[in-house]
Structure formats: C-alpha cells, structure tokens
Amino acid sequence: MIKNRKTSMRAIAAALTLAAAGAAGLWTWAAVAQTGAALGPFTDAQAQAGKSVYDGKCAVCHDAGGETIKLVGPGFTDRWRSRGTKDLYTRIKTTMPFSNPGSLSDAETTQVVAYILKSNGAKAGPADFTPATAVAINTVIPARQSGLYAGYTSLSGAPQPTGLTFPGTVEKYTPVTEEMLLHAPAQDWLMHYQNYAGWSHSPLKQINTQNVQNLQLRWVWSLDDGERQQITPLVHDGVMFVSTAVNNKVQALNAATGDLIWENSLGPRLENQVNATARTMVLYGNQLFYPASDATLYALDARTGKINWKFKHTDFGNDKIGGLMIADGKLIVGRGVCDEASLEDRCFIAAYDPKDGHQIWKFSTVAYSGEPGGDSWSSMSNGQRAGADAWIAGTTSIPASSNGTTRPRRTKAWTWMKSMRKSWWTADRRSFF
Ligand code: HEC
Image (cartoon, rainbow, N blue to C red; front, side):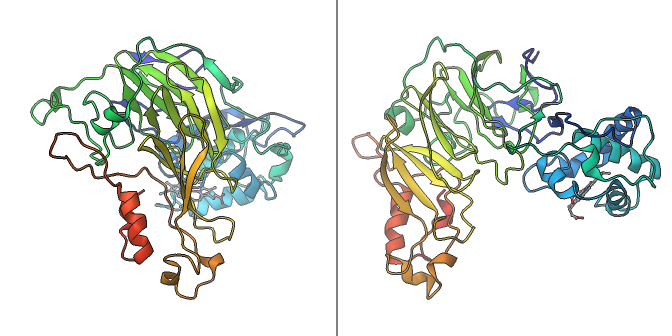
C-alpha cells in the first residue's frame, strides 16, 4: 500500500523501512516563478527528453545529496547566471558524465541542457537548442528575488505551507520517563541509537537470520523531495516520528499502518545544506525535540506536533545543530560544522531544561589558551583553533549496580570532558558525538 497525501509533492521520494530512513536527495522541487524572463532557447520536447538523460546519466552523482554539486536551485544559478548556454553545453559535452566524459551525443547534451535550464525556471520556447546556441543564461532564468529562496516553488506548483499542516492527536501516548530511556523498551526507539550504549539495532528477537528473507513490504511513506536525508526515525507507543531535513517537516505516523497522525511544517526550506543537520531527534516526557537546519531547536508536543518552545541554538549560520540526547533529565545538544576558524564560531555542547529550553550549562569543545587543555594546541592562536564538532548524539555506558537498579553514573561526555582537562589529545573525543 503506497500512502501519499493529496497535497504531498511527488511519490518518488524515499521508502521508509522499519527504523531507518533511506531517503535520497531527489531532483524535482525547484522551479522559479516566471518574472519577466525571455523564452528559453529550447523546446519542451527537448527538456522532456533531457529528463531521461539526466535520470539515467547524471542523477547518480548530482542527486546524491550532501556536498555534490546541485544542478538546480540557487547554488547552480548563482554560478551560471552570468554565463552563456554555450558554456554550459561545452562544459557538459566535454567533461560529463564525470566518469565517462565525452560519451554524450550532441542530441543528449542539448536535451540535458534544456532540462537543466527548464528546471531552473527557464520557459520552453519555439526553437530547438543546438550546440551553437549562445544565449546569456540570465536572460532566460529569472533574477533571484530578495529572499534567498523567494520565488522558488515546488515543481508540482503547490505552495509550501508552514505551520501545523496536518493537525491530529496521538490517541495513546505514555510520557517518556528517564526509566524508559535507561531501559529502552524493546519495541520502542526513543533516542538516536535506540539505547544509551549506542547499539543502533533493535533488541527485538522475532526477526532473525533464519526468517529475515520472509519480510514483506507493509507500507511506504514519501518524504519530501530534496537534499540529503539522514534522520533516524523514533518510535514510541506504536507511533513513528519522522522528519524531512530539507524543509524541516516533522510527522507522526501510525507505525503499523503508515497513516499520518499529525504534521508540522516548521520550515525553513534550505537548499545545499552541507550536512543535513537533522540527524537525531529525541523523545522525553510528552515532547519530541527536533533540530532544524536553520539551527533552531524545537520542543514539539509529541501528541499533537504543536510547538512548546523553540530557540536558536547558535547564530553562526545554518546547518549547525549537532546531535541531541537526554541525560539526567537534561537536553544535551551539540554543535556541528565548526571548522570555520573564527573566534565567534567556537564549537560547544550545551545542556537545556526540557521544560522551557533555558540553558543550564555550555561547554566549549575547543580549549583556548589559558583554559584547561589550552596548551595542547601549542602556540596556535585562538582564532585558528576550530573543529571538534559535536555533530551526532552521544552514547553512555550504564553500569548495572548490585541492587539491580541502573543509572548512568557518568556519561562518556563527562568522562571525556574530565580527561580533556588533563590532556586534550589523549581523550577519546571522536567516540563521543
Ligand atoms: C560520476 C559522477 C558524475 C556524473 C555521472 C555526472 N557528473 Fe556532473 N559533475 C560531477 C562532479 C564531481 C562535478 C564537479 C567536478 C568538476 O568540476 O568536474 C560535476 C560538475 C558538473 C557541472 C558543473 C556544475 C557547476 O556548477 O559548475 C555540470 C553542469 C554537470 N556536472 C552536469 C552533468 C550532467 C548534465 C551529467 C549527466 C549527463 C553529469 N554531470 C553527470 C560528477 C558527475
């Protein structure tokens, strides 16, 4: 059974299986509003034919997400707007596909150029594109509008609404307690790695090496197209929480049937995210915590998707929130993409109160001179000390005590920080976050 809401964009996005979202960045969303640009130097038939060329010979790399160069959207048009269509033709004809340059026929190349121009907002005209066609790209692709992504709409033409785009309520939801986090119920997936030890696999035993071959598809859910998708869905009380990184849309699904329960389209839609920050979510109490790609941290009511609170975790750019976890009742949030050397852009891990989001502590992961561990950077100036990203959720070791109760005595984070004071480089910092 393929589930697809009427308003959802395209059915081709990712199939979501059990607890792993395998969504590929896909090429479909961006068409630019037509504002005063001339007709493009290609026909619709060419652009149509170019889609097959693109899908067959280009998408494998250019839709791969992450750092791969996108051929649609502001990233591409900013580079090519000032150039001509002949340049684009020659670039593709002589250097692409990267793995087999020069293998495209003239016809295939003209078609794929037409497809790329059209996907970036150019309008098909009456004349065929030929290898000799030389038109300034900025005359056929509309100027970028004031906002970074203003004027871009989905190819389906549907506007991208934000807010609670599908209201609903989870009927049966038990608040997630610390006890549940410590002894993760086998049928649930409450945190990034399923449990604090970081197993990353389910403790359920029903599916095993003998019967795994008998698994069958029950349902498929389409995530929105675009960019890299790395979120780990969470599961609690038969509800699966998923999200789409490119536009920060969070959804609660009935895990048994694939039916949508609620959806909050938090936004914004960001293209060319380097890292698809939203990798980890965590459940605690009645809340679902979500790290949006504009570095905003959200506490949603897990039962309704409504926003309880939100704030900017860091003001230094998008795509910067790292991993989330709950430890000792606190929401621990890292920061990623810290390799830009800048005094203000220092990486950190912070703890927040899940109730209202106020900060409890903040720890810089790079030690400056004069600070504990600072001398391990030798005489390097503070401005050059960068990196030490806390980009993924932490793990902890939970020793069982003699009376049967278990507590996270000391998370790896804290062991790590403590040892870091002694010596930065001997600390096993890479195994945490
Ligand atoms: C095997 C991977 C791969 C395939 C397949 C591939 N490309 Fe590329 N493409 C790249 C890489 C890597 C770059 C950047 C490196 C470079 O400049 O050559 C690139 C760059 C480009 C650029 C320049 C982008 C810019 O903004 O400057 C264009 C245009 C392009 N490719 C078009 C195509 C088209 C059209 C196809 C299909 C016919 C295609 N590519 C197939 C890997 C690939």
